[in-house]
Image 1: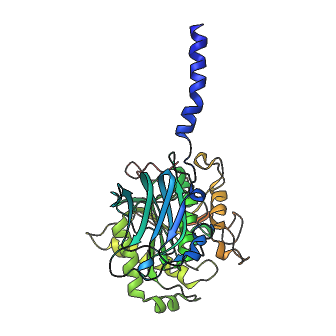
Image 2 (image 1 turned 30 degrees about the horizontal axis):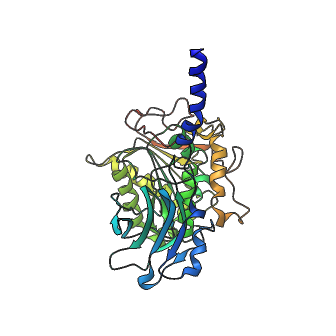
Image 3 (image 1 turned 90 degrees about the vertical axis):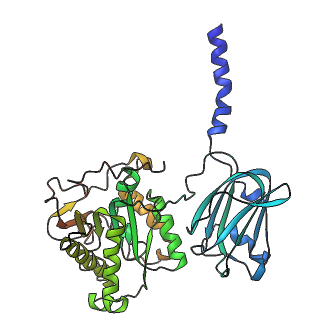
Amino acid sequence: MRKVAALLLMLLALPVVSAFAGEAADLTGQVDIKAGSRAFALERLLDRDYTTAWRGEGSGRVITVTSRQAMHGLYICFLEEPRAWTAEYRVDGAWQALPRQTSRYQHQYLALPGVFELRLKPTGNNRAWFQISELYVFGAGATPGFVQRWREPAEENALLVLFAHPDDEALFFGGAIPVYAGQRGLNVVAVCLSAPSTVRRAELLNSLWEMGMDAYPVFGPFQDKHSLKLATAYKNAGETRVKRFVAGLFEQYRPMVVLTHDLEGEYGHGQHKMCADSALHAFDQAARRADAFQVRKLYLHLYPENQVEMDWDQPLPRFGGRSGFEVAQAAYRWHQTQQHLGQFQVEPRGSRHSSYRFGLARSLVGPDIKGNDLMEHIDLDEYTVNTLD
């Protein structure tokens, strides 16, 4: 009888435990949101369209959120990377700044201490940037998986993926980021050489999060200009400037392995060629300097020598059994502004620009033997992190 009673007590306790451990409720539709200006545009915060935004004016660049239920989380998608700003909550009639500093991330999550009134506002001299695309408010519980919680890239990384534009990370590198960052939990840094528009930057963040990244990407300062020749791409961006930037990436993020574009630019894009050429230059220049950090392996997409054929078709437990290739396809769908360009796809295994095929262009650890792992011959003990589930 005592065993039965104990079992009943356990069963009765299960719903309570599940509710406590469950996902936080989305309170966004239940809260009251007010703005200091352009109140008619507040609906853009809730339309779940990151191409629209509420844009404050003058001293009215303030958003206030009031809720009858305690607010424990706030997810903000800014239109552009924010500058100086603050989040405050009301305590006994007075505004108090959140103890956690706000960051520069275009999409960011703030944990809240169960507050009922909150306001967001820019600080400093330049406040014209304060524009918000989307806003989500959450109650108590686990943060939903779609909410992006970024961190700075690690000081030392297993892999650096260098690509020219948002969407290249999926189209030509396929399952690389899902496998190495998402599944294997390695420190990976993603670098976009060009400086994309705010919308395309948001699309890249959504894509990388889908792939299992939580290290905020690095954006280069170079304008996206189409060219077919490497020389033209270098002329547009400044060859010395590009090569210094890429060499600086290797020094700052200290990757063991670098993965980048095809020397022929896949379909012939000059900036893709520039990524490959500048990476080779940085590797070779570092080899000539005793004080320089040296990347151990450099892979180029489609490089004809020392080729490896990656298997992005294996099921990945961290992604519910989806393959790396399938995750890359899902990530590419976040690049919504590019979907009308029907000629682009995440390149399948058998295609001319296969996202499965790379070549080891430079190596300090010898040739690959197995030829199916970018990390072959690399000691990974220092580069494993606990990624988000």
